[in-house]
Image (tube, rainbow, N blue to C red):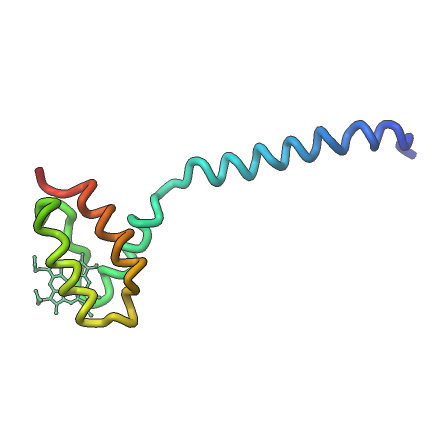
Length: 92
Ligand code: HEC
């Protein structure tokens, strides 16, 4: 049997370890939300088009047009996140 004291001292350590685990997952996601949405939302009607296809100033018009084809599939919030991702990786 473990002594009460031993368990009492282990609990804060365990809590700190769990917090570190959670922080690790939250602070360094493998892909950004925008990229994940882009891959999911923009590959339904056609092959994924590369962000390099347009410049950052051209993308808004294209993404607006894509959203208007199916506004239920791509919400305004999702559009904004996708647009940010595309502009960050757009043709220079
Ligand atoms: C509802 C179906 C649909 C969805 C969802 C969709 N597209 Fe399209 N896309 C089309 C169709 C149809 C065309 C061809 C006609 C046109 O250009 O409007 C097209 C054409 C394009 C083109 C080529 C024309 C151009 O302006 O360069 C690009 C790039 C593009 N889509 C990117 C995207 C991106 C990025 C997304 C995600 C935000 C997306 N599409 C989501 C249907 C869709």
